[in-house]
Every structure is written in structure tokens, then in C-alpha cells.
Image (cartoon, rainbow, N blue to C red; front, side):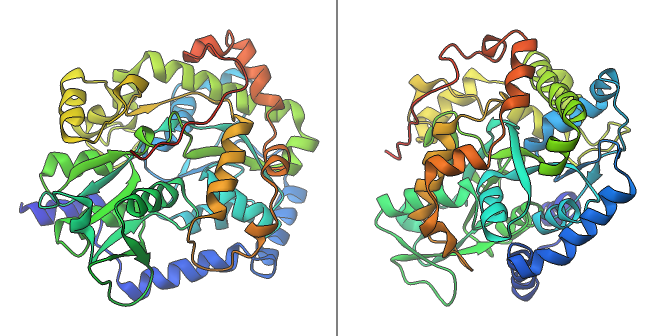
Length: 408
């Protein structure tokens, strides 16, 4: 099998520009009050018809989803006395959001900036209840790229406009003196940003339709394995110990089924603690040869992400992919507490980030209000304490911290 056939077989064929635009327009419609209304109405009917619905997980097959999948695989929901349906795997963020709003699933992982757009753009009654993971994303570029200036005049893919990936990428490009556009042909001083589903990025890079992408693992690790890309920078080396995907649940469940909600969060927190201490087993759970078929990824690819390697870290320090070795960041880690300082910083950064589509609501957002209103940390605090406290996740600083965001 040729390298490019392998790319297509493991990650799918890249969407056309028109198809990607349709996908973005669909998502944009979902995150408006009018566009979300039919789905929200369907969700209300679904909850009325099944007020005691089991845990129904919706996810993308990326390592960001690890705690949800580990909790299911290890029977942690059942140990809490909960009924749980098989997790539903989706290909795109728009599919996850549509299923969540319509009540087809009730526990999902979403890009944290996407939850901001959802709650304040479409007035979706959803809440962030925990972080799903920390770090876990990189900027990957063609092997021929030797400086950020080489990206000028080319196209780089992002998973969505409302993503930490977009925020970090734009900060990196700005420091290099590059501008960004979303339409037309870029000049040598510009980079064109396009939205792609994570699974479409690798084949697009392999065929050189794009010069790079910034996305969740394991698509960066797979590009390294296949020799079609190299990691330029880890997002966790720019924003220290940052969240990317967060656990999102329906606000109505939190209000009307508090015991159920607490048990759901308990299982997810337990899964995170377990995954930190059982990384090799976690690789086996997520691998494509697991009969559960949670993801289509090879064990070797997942191992590059989940298993620490001093040798690889030394190579990344040499190349500049890691510039803050003193931060001691893992390629991906797991801790559930949603620090208010992170949400406040995220809102502030979003206000200065170029995002396509309706974004007027961002100007009116108060970061401190969003941290209080969007996030409900009651359940995760109790679950953490039941797990032995934050020390179970390697945290000694308590429930507050100062954010560190450094591009250089």
C-alpha cells in the first residue's frame, strides 16, 4: 500500500473546499438562536419522553476523548449505579453539537471556545462540568518548512475557528510577522486559515494541499510516523497546562438530576486518575485492535502521545518544538478541575482572535461572568475530593492559579 493510500485508509479522504464551507455554515447555523431552536425543541421532547435517560456519550476519535472512553471501557459508570449506552463516534464537531442539542447524547467533549460560542451565541442551555484533559495538541508542518516565514503564501488547517488551536496559531503567526486570511490567495506575508475535520488534515498534508495543521492528537504523531510532517510547536509549550476539550452536559440534567450528574462526573474523574497511572493500558483501550473499536488509530501512534519519552523530548527541545522544558509538560495529561482563571484568559484571548462568522457577542462578554456562568464546578470539586484531592492529579497549588501564555 502506498503512503498516500495509507493516509486515506486511516484518516479518510479530504473534503472539497465546498464541502468544508458547507460544514462550517452548518455549524454557524447551529450556534445561532434561530438555527439551534429546532434542535433544542427536539432535545426538550427527548428529555420529556425519557427523563431518566442513561449516559449517552458523544465523541470524536481523538485522544481528547480518552477519559470518556476509559470510563466506559472500565465500567466506571456502572460502578456508580448508572445505565450507559455504547459511546457514539462522530466524524465532525457539527455532528457532535447537533446530537447534543437534540438530546441524542447527553455527555460530550467539546472544544472549550466552542462552548462559549454555543452558550452565548445560540443560548444553548449547556454547562462545562470539568476539563477532559490538558495539552494534547501540536502545530505540525511539512518537513520542508524550516521557519515560520516558510508558511507565508500557504494554507494551514485548524479544527474550528472557536478553538484553542486557532488562538495559539494566530499568536505564533503574529510573532513571526505573518497575517492570516480566510479567503482568496495568500501573499508571502499571509497564511490562509481553513477549517478541516481532524481526520481530513493528515491526507491533506500528505498530498501537500496544505503546509501544516494544528490539531489534537494523534494526527500529529501519525504525521511523524509516516514522515509527512514534523511537530513545530506543542500548544502546551505556549499555554502552560491548558485545557482543550471539556466535558459538557445539559444544564437541565444538572438541575433536575443532581445525583445522576454527580455520578457521571465521578466516573470521568476516576477515569482521568486511572489513565494517568495506566498509560500503557490506556493505549490498548483506545487502539483500533480493541474489540470496542473506539478509535481507528494504531497502538504505536497512540503510544507516541500517551507514553512519555525523554529521548523524544530532547529532540523536541533541540528542534524548538519545546522551548519551555522547565514547565515539564507531558504531550497529553489528564486533570479535571476547570480553573476560573483559564476561562477568563480564554475569553480575553478570543476577543483578540480572528474568527469567521457571527462574533459580535464576544465584545459584550465579561470574562469573570463567563467563568461563573458557563462552568459549573460543584460536581467536579466533590469528585476530586473523593478521589483524594488535587494531589491525585499531580497538582499542589489548590483551586486557583495564574495563567502562563508565552509564545517565545
